[in-house]
Length: 419
Ligand SMILES: [Zn+2]
Image (cartoon, rainbow, N blue to C red):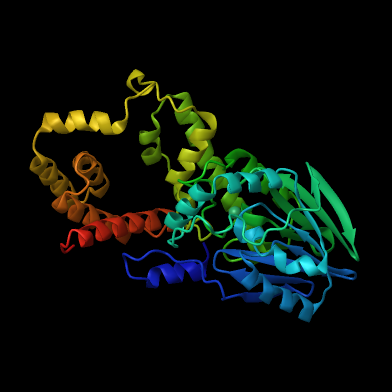
């Protein structure tokens, strides 16, 4: 996500998860006399002082951190007149309840309440995927949207309001979510962009979540660039960009999104299967080392899957996959044909030893689907995941490998055997 997180990733033991939820560590920045930023490792919030109170953009993850932000707002200005939500993710709306006593107007895109409802109905699922993605305990009773307060006002395409000496232009975007809002304040040439920018390769792909809108996302960033902001506040990652860096950041991100998007579209039109696409599609060479596009949170393979899913149904044009029998059943047939668990284990070990961990994982899966308690199989499984982890600094994939390493560890412990 940001440099700080990257440093942390580099410092953790190779097989540990990337922990980003450091609740009580709020840092503040003051990039412009009227603009303040509050940062926690997973998200940022910001506020703008006007001649008639404060407009707050986002509220951080939970009330324990937003309470610290509220103190700082009141120290440096106040009162809090309006809150704008950039989108419905809990790390942007979850701290709102702290501001209830300020009675602010709360403004959001009109789709935000529906998106919040989606989180409520999928509460258990959301808790499960959060536990994998962020390496936190599975807690189905955790409030899906933290200390969220519903908006008092919503809009559809755009809205403009004046607060004191400043104008706030709000624009809807479909980007990381369908309810994204970015804000431009012309008097100070500042853009507040939510998670449209996270300081690294944008989150246009997530293996756990369906909503990502690559093409409208790139177009929204172009609209932001057209405003020629001199200050850009991102609500994920590093947060503050100023001067020439703003355009460099926007140029690189826009080009990256179009590059991946257009390659997926081309591959779909050529009927390339998705499992080949994820390995064939890459950023152009000149963008690969861009400091704005590191694969610290998301990665191009995840982007390819999300873009594909937006444009393509589940059917891959193989009639065997139109109405398939359960994978477990098919696997059982293959397993019986091989007839020798040791042969599968040997081949998976060979692949692992010759540095083909992903293929090793899939071959080994034939054995483990049939016999999940196979001790040697689970030991090899752990070692393969560990190897995948060692070369992976993307939070979402790395934490996934770690999650399943923990499952192997638990099973082996229950069986009373060493790793
Ligand atoms: Zn988000």
